[in-house]
Image (cartoon, rainbow, N blue to C red; front, side, top):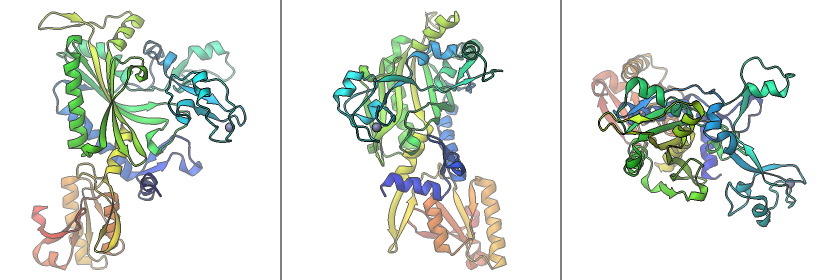
Length: 447
Ligand SMILES: [Zn+2]
């Protein structure tokens, strides 16, 4: 097993992540988070919110609807350009994303360029391709009372999309925010939420899925200052990833995206790449979106998106710096950095060295023996005390103590607290550290 497979296996075995609709054989590109997974995921999202919203005076949170007026996606360019190059094998009819099965080409590949790579069909091995066609990745649905036998025109009028990014929910609320809370520029609007992309071939576990959670900030700036603000946002991302998520610095690499590969709205983009177990992959993006979105919204809505600086009286359409991160990508970066195999006293173990602020459980409490009522009662007392204080504390009295430690190591619980006969004498407990496996005696009052 390579290390990504080991992590997938651990995720399923311990209840972090299951394949979506598992009971029905799965549903490609979807994943369900179990009790431990949702706990870790929520902690990651909460830390982000604390760092970028609650602990700052210049960034405000919003939560917009997933279903948006379809004009949104026309104005943003998604209807026209949010597409991947699709190619079909004429022999076996399999469909692929062309730039993922051939080397040296990108998303804007032409049929001629693709054919020149002489790629063989990954399914049947033949080389007989149809033309490259643009496949729009937005999921469509219909809102309101549309019947299956309604004509195309009615259906088209009621079309809606599941949002492919959270960003547009922010841009479309820019005016509401400016008109209600009068923020001083530069200011940011942050949002966390689901986004949907109909990937042609979802793969790499939760790295490329069809439904994901995003955390995005649109940081509105005076166009004259975009460079400085870009640098500030860039440093903030590093600080968050390295000091709050505790991702190893040497696994994060910046990649300056060349013009030809940048999204249609961006004048500068840095991809933050991460060394995942299956190789280097994008973790997040930092893009200078200029005034592309606000200007398009102004044109499409007829409403002014201008900002007037209260101090200088200068009037302008703000430019935007956008840090955008996929929660699942960050989740896997955290999990794979924490995943460790080592040896304790001659026996092999798997341990998740998760930061204490992210671990699903901060402590595990257990009685040394489950058939001694005095021990169990005392352990319950400690458990209740810690649960009241910390919240995320688990109880385990199954199997022997060694097995409990292995299980807690595998789910990343930083410390295990054991109540033994000495506890009944002197109110001290054993606290065992996950990473070192070392134990110490601590007074209950000091926990
Ligand atoms: Zn084929």
